Every structure is written in C-alpha cells, then in structure tokens.
Image 1 (cartoon, rainbow, N blue to C red):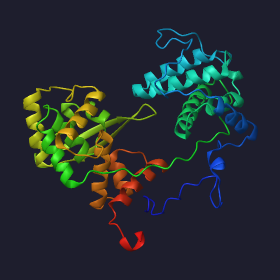
Image 2 (cartoon, rainbow, N blue to C red):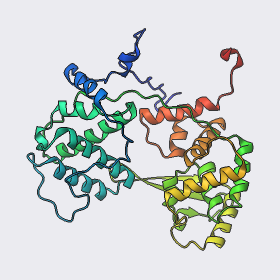
Image 3 (tube, one colour):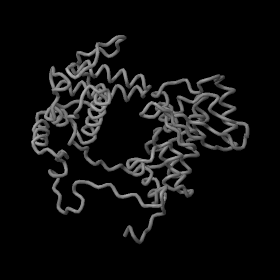
Image 4 (cartoon, rainbow, N blue to C red):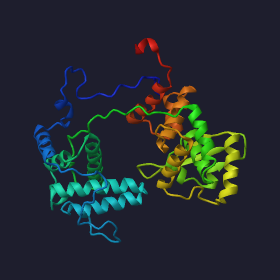
Length: 353
C-alpha cells in the first residue's frame, strides 16, 4: 500500500531479518547493543517473583501529589526526579492512565537502582529493571517509560546522558482483530436502543464513526454540527503527546441526526454529552452484547476495529484510515491500519489451499 508520497513503506526490520533457523532462546533474548547488559537482563528473569503488572502496589518514597518541589539537578534522588516528571505530564494534561503507568514503572526502576542520584543510574540498573519484566510487552512498556523519563531530564538540561541508550524493544506483532459482522452490528444497535438513554448514541459513535471511549467521554454539544441534518459533522479533539490538540471531523448521516436528537431529549445533556466514566462504557457494551446474544467478544475497541474494517471494504486506503481514526502517520499505526485492509480483502481460496 503506497503512502502519501506514492512510495510503498518499508517493511519493519528486525534483528533476525534474512536469518533462517532462529531458536526460541535467540528470539526471546533481550535486544541490545551491549552483551554484558543483555546477560544481566537474562540473569534477573529467573529470580523474578510473579506479579500482576500495573496493579500490584509498589511503595515509593516520593509523594504522588505535591504543591512545591525542591529544585531538580543532576544529583537529585530518583523519587524527586520522578515527581518532577509526573508534574510535567500532568501539566501537559496527559491521560491519567498514562501518567499512572509511567509513575508505576519508574517506582520499579527505583527499586532496582536503589537510593541513587539520577546521574548515577547506570545501564546495568536499566538491565535489571527490564529483566524483571514478565513478558515482551511489559519490557517494551518499561523501556518506553524509562526512555521518556530520561529524555525529559536531558531536555531540562539536568542530565547529559541517557542510560537506556543501546536498549531496544522486542518487535511485537499486532494481532488481527475479529470484527463484528453486519447482521451482528444491526442487532447490537437495536439492542443498544433499548438500554440506557446514552447507550445507542455512544454505541453508534464507536461502531459507525470509529470514536474511542475517551473521545466519546470528551464530546460536548458544540462538537456536533447539525446545520445540515442530512450530513451532521462530529468534531473530535484529541490531546497529543506534546501537549497540543489534534482535530478531525467526521461526517455522518440523517440517521445519526435523528438518534442524537432523541438522546438530547431523553438525557437533557447541556454541555458534556456522556457523563459517565470509562468503566460504565465497558459495562454498557458488555450488557448490550449479552442482551443481543452475540457470542463473540465485543468491546469499545472491537467496535472501532469493525468500523475500520468496514471503511476498508468501502475502499478506504491506509492514509484515509489513519485520518478517519485520528492516528499519526508512523510505522506502528501504518501496521495497524494494514491489518484492517487485509481483513477487508475477499478470501482467496486458491491461495489458502
């Protein structure tokens, strides 16, 4: 699939490209340029105690929320630097789960580095921290958390080196999603109309316009333009990792105008349209799935996957899908939309035999 420049994007390279007969031990070995650090990582793994990632509480000496912090400098302790970093993320209005995830990972780094000054954290500390990860995905997340933390310290001119330099994440293939068939979609929409007043409105936005759960919860009345009832426009605003705002506009149908008016009449919403929390959205989707007797898994993300596959079947190419879904044009996101395009292709029985 060609990109906007007319060129086909290069396939992601791995450290095993062009090599046959790779063993499972070689594939699971930590990727990096330092053999000693790789050995340290591997040495930590067997001693790792079982833990539920992201949910197990880890004690930290740093306060989670503070009003005043001591100055940040190269000889500051890790807990103080982590507090400054968290404060910076909150000032950027990064999503709360992102802030909590980074903070959690950094408390684990503190556990392995010990009571060190930030300029004394070594690549071997990073190796032990990564080696404790329970799987490739967790290791990748921990590396991202640490790398962005030290990048912040370098940008603040507190440090002039990054101890995560030379470490690389494992390549993790994206799974093919399981979209919802058209007859199942109609059944779910009918069932959602019988649920709470906001259910059909939210369900439609995820299934027919590809909005994420967080995007639905951020919608306000002035984000929906019905000056043309046959072509209402939903404006979606999404905070970027740099603190900016990305906007996309999605054109819908008369059917959406009608159900939106019913939603307004029943809910009485004046500003924020869906006034529930993320768990309530998940529960609503599961409740509708159960009532509709749909056996396959249905989640907010599955509804968005189904929208993307339907758009690909209608002829949307990779750049169009990126735009519709509000995704930045990077290799990982291109890999994501390529999955939808593959799923939208008719099955070639000759090739599958």
